[in-house]
Length: 192
Ligand SMILES: [Zn+2]
Image (cartoon, rainbow, N blue to C red; front, side, top):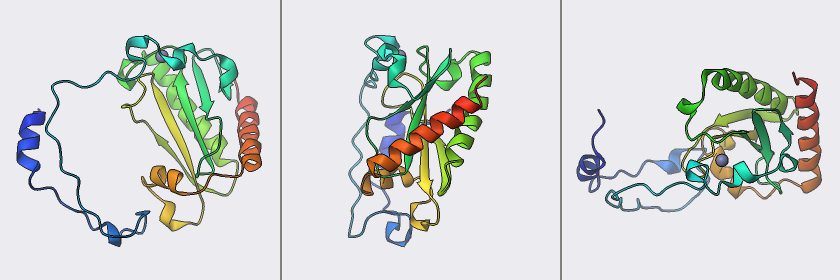
């Protein structure tokens, strides 16, 4: 069993390390940094947005707000471009909190969809990789991120691509809209 949060905090809080980020090509920033002190554990975690499906914006959203949908899944694009060429989010139609909560049938279909969507995004061209990520600490409604990074810019590889998404100026609107349309067409072409 992992340490309790209190045990972990007691052991680490006065021994935090500063990793050699200045040596990492993928680190987006320059200049001296220091580690932020680690605050002690809180009594309980804050509920996530839409917890338990109550006032969940993803449950309430209509299909019009999505790039692609089927009976069980919906693919979301934000209403404006960000720094990376393309960022889209796959959500369950029904409200689930964790990947392990998915019934087997949905979990199986998820595997197919992760591959199909990654392949469709990659087919747009000029992309070095499509990162497929699941972070679960924002909204509770189960969702996966697809972060497409440009090809041949070695500083943008790896997990800091999510930070570079905020560092790079936004993709031009017309380029982004054309790519969304191409992705929509690629997904439609492979629909069941
Ligand atoms: Zn929901």
